[in-house]
Length: 362
Ligand SMILES: *Cc1c(COP(=O)(O)O)cnc(C)c1O
Image (cartoon, rainbow, N blue to C red):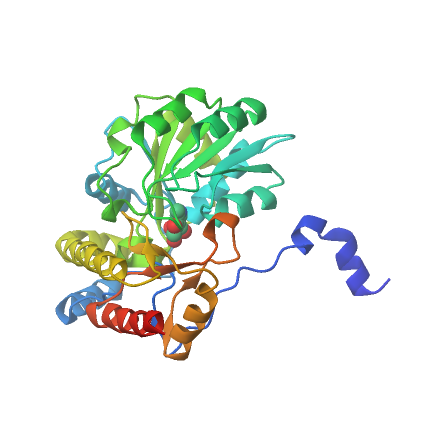
């Protein structure tokens, strides 16, 4: 038997059918594709950070509970005192922990589409069924009749709702999420990855519903390179999920750096405020352009729909001129002719708009 045959025999067919997660090479490009915070730290802050790192002992295992960091995150994210907190190596790892803890024969994960692709991906890795309920085409809001039907039929172990949603940028109506919490037989995860840019949150509602947990990340806040996410919720749930957490999953450099960053929350807040302001400016500017329809966003990106058939040529024109955005056209029927622009620094946003404007003038 050739090794290829052996691989085919043993690697699950659904894994073999996957394409590996593709990250485009962005070297030399203005990078507006991945919802990163475009701002670095002021020089003085960078120096102070390096001084702190000098004292980190990398020969030792990290604090397994990341106690000090967890306390700071509780404060920064206003986690209600009675709720438990669990940290992950990015919120992606938390999604995986949730699936590992709740998976089982015939069990499923339910989410909405277009949505964050990792819910479906991790369901597949963990051999769970995945049900993606389409959002309403007009405004990407939750399609409640469809959700009622799907939840009643599948009785999902896990429901994921990203609020604001990626890649559409809109938050879901609070009363709709509350109804999902009432209907869902299992755990409902409100994924608030974009909380720093949004006006609403379910964090303060934790405890009001037994099956509600809230997930956050520091990635979109400006610390994507650290890989740090957080799950907050009732101890009864989190004590169980904690059992499938890798020991020492938050490394010493991440713990120390995140602690340092949270001591400089004012810098992060300033950057977030600048991004929110730039988002409004970008939205207003896009709205004036012929054939470009931006969708209202409470995240650090804007979804835009081009005129029919124009998304791919616009994407390629931008790329040729050194600007990388996300092409969503072709990824879901509701995203025909759509691109996603992450908000960058002013000069980056200006360059993007200049190119889009020239393109629409044709
Ligand atoms: C970016 C994103 C995450 C992943 O965050 P990490 O903490 O970087 O793994 C989770 N959920 C949504 C909806 C996102 O857009």
